[in-house]
Image (cartoon, rainbow, N blue to C red; front, side, top):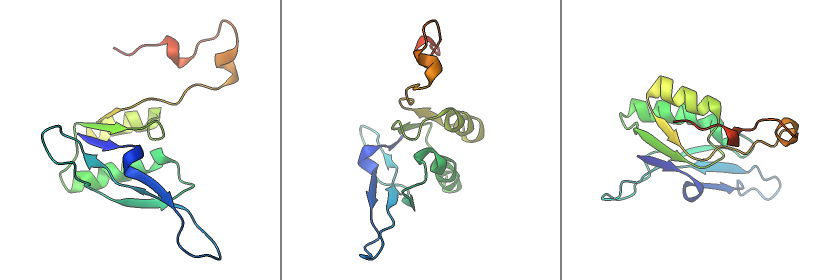
Length: 121
């Protein structure tokens, strides 16, 4: 099982005082209860890249190293419908984590449905 969450992601500047280009460092870690927690991959991206956009590349690298987990624990920034579907269909990895709340106008209208009214068995 892998975890990619707040403890394994940080944003920093590039150290150039004239212009700072924030980057994100994403390092999934093993999280088995009876084993050491190890970083298995480190990926740096621009801070403007959405977290979920890196998941496919990350799983591809882990697949090449034969280190794909059965479950990948992720925080809210990584979990969306595309990531859930592609990770499962392409790599047989189940993404576990909270989804973004629905803030659309339709979810606020009386008599409308939002994601909280649907359960997946």
